[in-house]
Image 1 (spheres, helix red, strand yellow):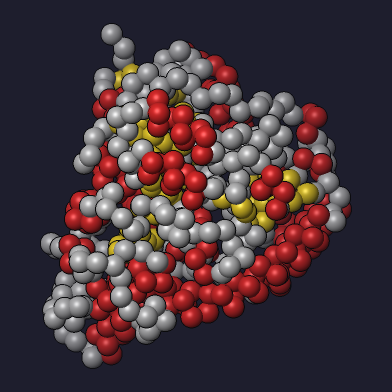
Image 2 (cartoon, helix red, strand yellow):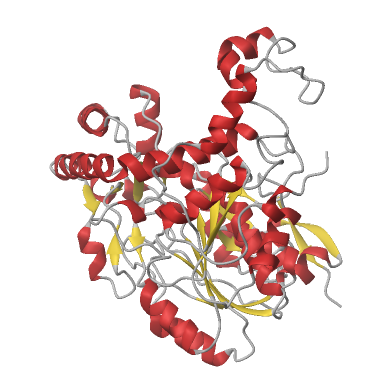
Length: 506
């Protein structure tokens, strides 16, 4: 079905208008449509429920199926303007303080693709923080951008990457005078937030826009005790994964345009349409509309409650033998301006267990499912409006139980852990490597070859290897060890890593 609604998604004149605490215009329009019991001579084939599989109907309910309607429905996203869809996006822009906002139905990953495609309209060179999400690397491939990577600060103890310092960005931009933009991440998976305001000043002083992957910081705009949001700090384009903390449905996100004229609204709009389905889910879009209102009306109160509850949980975790937490001490790092108190990142090194092993025990014995498990750190995520006190107590009880009766036979000293090696040199652009002549070789023969695919331990989805980087034996050994200890791999055509796809070099 043709879809052109994003091109008219919100007024293209100036800024956002409307009270973000108003009703949910898009969700209300969906409900009005369902309430009328219209003749559904259109997709989807379940027809609002009557033709759905009985098990699906029982699982998600008739109400959800009734709201599942196609794009280009009169009175919802076409018809007299502003349509409910346009109004919803304008209210989102007002809530987050953006010039314009786009609803995304392919997650924050779609926002990162759009950022790359938009920057490619101005040129091909771009400065990129090396520990960006793998979707940004996908965007570099699609857009044909030639990245100049700049390394974040690395934690020598926890073996995790923190943020980018303004000084590092300054050097990278000065070394890449033809760069048309810079792409950074804040906050990272562990809750560390960069000095985005200073990063913006560095980029803008050189006449280039700053795109920020703020997937994990969609809630920052709604409470004063949280880090400053990227938009408030002056970012030009911000990817916001609203489902992560604020609670829209999984796979929904919002892309925000900041103030200024460093990026063209029409270009971004075309790029959003380019990488979006022509059959977008009304359920995802409706959940974004509802999440916006929920955050605007109740965000401050609910975030305050969650912050207090997680603080208590954090203190209780620190009292358990062998555990420590990442907290405001993160801000002592050179690259970290602030930290997100809703992220409970736990240092497990003192337990004698790896994070992988501890995560397995929590799941097997107490049905505790974590956001991330790694060698040294496990991460628990708390939502904006959940019963955080009760959830925190459940986690502490499970941790105490595991540490009290776990079989600690797999002690850390019995397992050889490698420190993450330096990233290999980039010898060709990600796009040239991805689309160039390739061959599949055994992993044992891959060292020294140029990778044609990404290898990213997931989560957090930060590539250890990029298309175009020369593979080193140290990197391959590290990835193999990660898999052996329970990590997962994104991007590899052979998920077992017995083989790898490499570039055929002349």
